Image 1 (cartoon, rainbow, N blue to C red):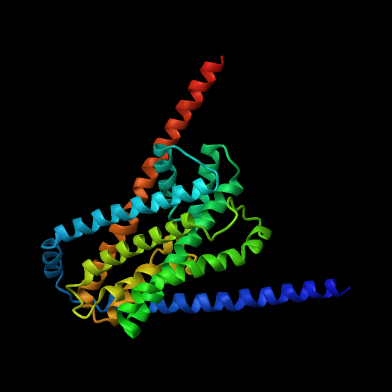
Image 2: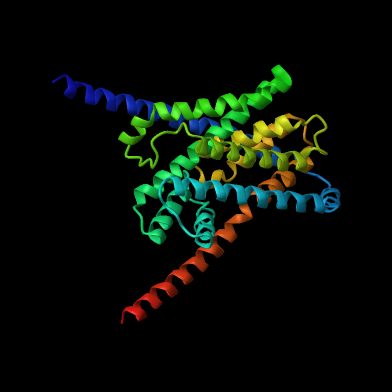
Length: 321
């Protein structure tokens, strides 16, 4: 009888939580939309010829940002492949590249569903269960979130305790993995398939620290793009902005955080005294070179993968006959 009474109560609490969460999300999106409109309004009468000349003179800097972005993508793909291996999924090297970029092809899907699309593709191509590959995507995202959180806290504390903050990830990352181990039974009850006994092992900690290097590269790109525009911008500012975009984009539920991440970055940099006339081109350059340029690459690899898969299926059919 008591269980029957508690079930409606839990459902009501869940409904109330969703209601206020949606209200908060709407308020944040309205705030970001207002900031975006104000930024666009402030561009009226700007000298776009001067803006073009400024960035044309720094085209080699943008090329450098792109090359660093390639290193970022390489490391990210390596981490993703290692997480798959821990889940017992071992695609070949070329196949791993195709599968990794399939998430970028689906980057315009809302609420991180691009990762779900990649997990479905991985399950189909590697002949494993979708639950296993989806769990790998969740674990991969969790490791990324742990490293982002550790770096955000470290960058924030840098302004309080200076260089000592550099050692905080050595404490925060193991603490994050320990927290994951504590909630491991809950994750299993949520039908997450975890292919290893414990989160507290050196190999997994190494993946999280490697993910931290990803964020350091991404923050370096942001710093390189804006350092001449904002004299007071420090690398720690860039690191805080870069890592926090993961959570802003995910919470928004908007495909790839499109527009939200750009507005969020622009708002923070405007607050740091970035000149409005350069703000929009600089934010777009950073986001295109670090994120959106990989969308067509994802579609290309997805097409090549489909062609290769059909060719292999045809050869197997002919061999069986």
